[in-house]
Image 1 (cartoon, rainbow, N blue to C red):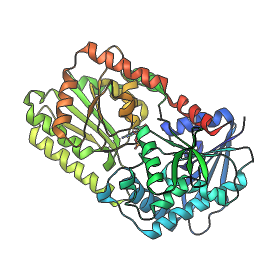
Image 2 (image 1 turned 90 degrees about the vertical axis):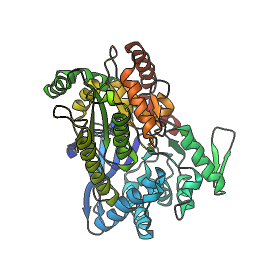
Image 3 (image 1 turned 180 degrees about the horizontal axis):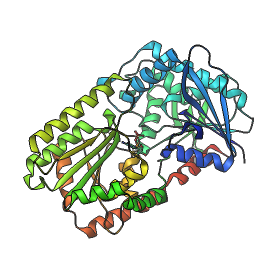
Image 4 (image 1 turned 45 degrees about the horizontal axis):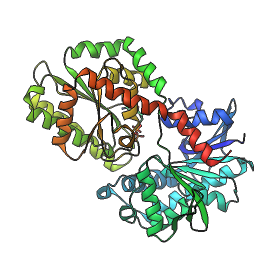
Length: 456
Ligand code: ADP
């Protein structure tokens, strides 16, 4: 079996001491199977041309990390990836910022990755590139002479053409995507948006009859590969952490009140101010729910170098303070807001204690929290998932979750109420339905399907 070369912006190298998230679990499992290299940024910046990649070998996997020039990094990561592409791909044009120099830094970092990776490649390697940070990488690798099959998986949504063309030089982005052999998305809708983009831009998009589509002078495979989670691990962690003192303290403290939980990176695409407003609407319109529900929001700070992220943090603090000031009683606080990340194990325990999981992004590629919440439940007495229709996960979990439009606070408030009143039998049925979906397409099935598409 040929080696796999996985490339992502960050690399979860064992020496980095970071716990592996869902993506890392999938990449590591794929790499372990066939052996290979995980290549990306190591987390350090430098001045000028970076030195050769640092190589760290663990079993059959080599972790190869490069530094990035500080000025290029700011343009590439903060400005272009997180200031331009992220809002564009999440349909948030109001906060989209564009700077031509940042776009050029983005291209330069992709050139750097190609230049540093190229000497590490062998002729029969297969290459799997992850996410919007690295869209031009196939183009740059081809320019550097690489002929290996190269696949791309976009973890975030891909917008419709009318939104995409807001981006100056958007055709360059489509052209770059057409340089991959396999282009994978989270949902069918994302595939349709990409193909529609190719057609509208006059770059191809017509089926070739062999399952591929024509793009420029190439034939590429475009398909949906919805990412899954390690279902059994989340279920085990959920059950095991009921023993944890901290989870037990929370359960005791709740007494017969029901816990509503939200867990997100503090990102404006996650719909947190809107979620707080929906909870306020619930307390306003249904006074009977006051004192009965406690809403725990855990939001870990992220991308703190980007202005929009600093603003949303202040907005949420204000909103939590306002709602608590308005409704709290001496012995009941409606919203408990934690502004930091917690360990995975603890999260799975909190999920299991919760009666309602509130996952209401304004737009999301998949949303793994939705899947983790379901997997961590006690099947005999499971909680209910309230899920945004605009999350990729809704395409898979739509039959078992209560779907809501996050722009409609009354609709979200009604769904929370409905979830809190749902009889146990209905909760069990819905949970079993969702678990079946999660098990059929877990993180291992996801990476197997993609690698298969890339060819052995
Ligand atoms: P995104 O990739 O946009 O952050 P996802 O929901 O797909 O959103 O994945 C987020 C991952 O990070 C999940 O595995 C989740 O458990 C974890 N996570 C999110 N928020 C927190 C938090 N506050 N503390 C710890 N882990 C978190």
